[in-house]
Length: 331
Image 1: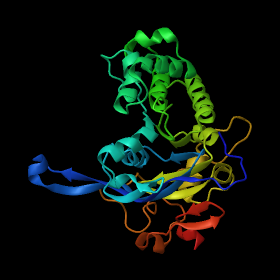
Image 2: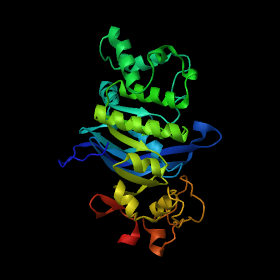
Image 3: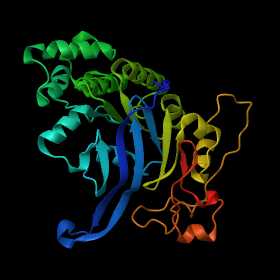
Image 4: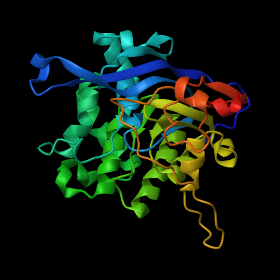
């Protein structure tokens, strides 16, 4: 999983100033025109290096899943760039986009709703091979059986339907479908949040095994900090559509700089019940992305708020090696 090589890792994906605004329409729908816009993702930038796992965390509704879906072009971004191997994904179309999509695959949060209930698992897993014209049609069944075994499914599962599987097995099918096209980057959108805790650890271990076996890079989107800590090399913390802090995992947990990150980490339970730690409770409600606060978007809930925070949005600045924070406390 973790990249220990001394050599400088190679840049795989460079996301710059990504914005995704959803128009909010009145009761007449499109006829009534837009009544405003929801700023789901607002000026988010980060980089992914080959072979690493980048964790993207934050509360529900902070825009992390929309970020992943925008990179895949499952939802069209409003603006920004996503340079994958020096090509901007947001400018691609037709065959070029199809080629990129073969190399970037996604594992979804709810494995059941991402599977066609009328299709047997075998034909669901063969579909990417047909779409991307991979291999010979007569070899497809063998390829499917092979990937099924690698993710811990039985060969006879090939003929079954999605409703005949448990949640953990369905997520293995989702992972098999992502891996069968031999991708470079896998976007995991909350891949374990719908599963029981005992099954979560199996899927996390499987993701790590597959990463090693296929030399994969992961963008791992989740709200569970302990899961992200276990699997990620670096972590980006999002709040209300914006990136608040970014750092290597160990450093983020040892010395979180942003007040929001500090509050998130204070809520993570400790394995030792004798050790007491102070819980930082944020005051106030999460503001609406339809009308985000002026200045720093976190100022309405921040325990250290200053007058400047209410007027001026903080710029992202580098504090230490690869540790960035957007907060006026560090000016």
